[in-house]
Length: 311
Image (tube, rainbow, N blue to C red; front, side, top):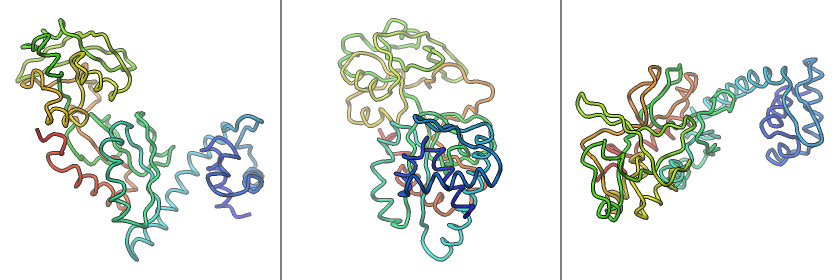
């Protein structure tokens, strides 16, 4: 038995949730994957997968083995790539976790240029707004927005993460412009559906802080939908500048209360007050050439200040 091949077969089946999808992704026969996983279970003397006609799930032993095996195989792949990269340009796969809207607007447009510059590389993009576990999902680098929880991960700051209060010129002409944060209680505020149910906007200026409980006719868990509603003139929007900055530069939206810094809710004591766009990765990835060139490429394309904040 080729132990490494068997481990990779097990990881593929576990990650894809079945033998058939794992076979399709790996280009191997389902029967071959089955034999390899059977041999691995016999070798270690434990059942790793619960198998049924509809699904494949990890047993408790399988969950423990998956966590450690994934890390070991990732380290082995990294060692192989590291030696290979010393002989030439970076090559191989880079697995990246990205917030959905940010990736669509500010990463996807640059991918063709990146791959043209580094033709030996492949990008495996996990598009999700969840803060996934980098080890469990075998993520090389994740882009995170906002404040970071304290952790042992390495974080590189790529750009500021500012929230801006804005509305369309048509809405402000009809409803008037808020002069103080408290005025927002009388406006139609378009709010994001946070899991906590938080509809409190926080404003700071100098040493002052004001909390405003807002409400409005539209609430959504999709930031780009709220942007479209604001562009249509329906209300006041609090969104990151990377989402609305170019609309403000073009005059489609106007800043509201620009002298105030705007936030959502109060910060948890465990969260850094520095809100930024970060690339985060495990400490053992710090010497990865593939990771470095990707993060450097994004930082260069974003610019300083980032292009979406130039208005």
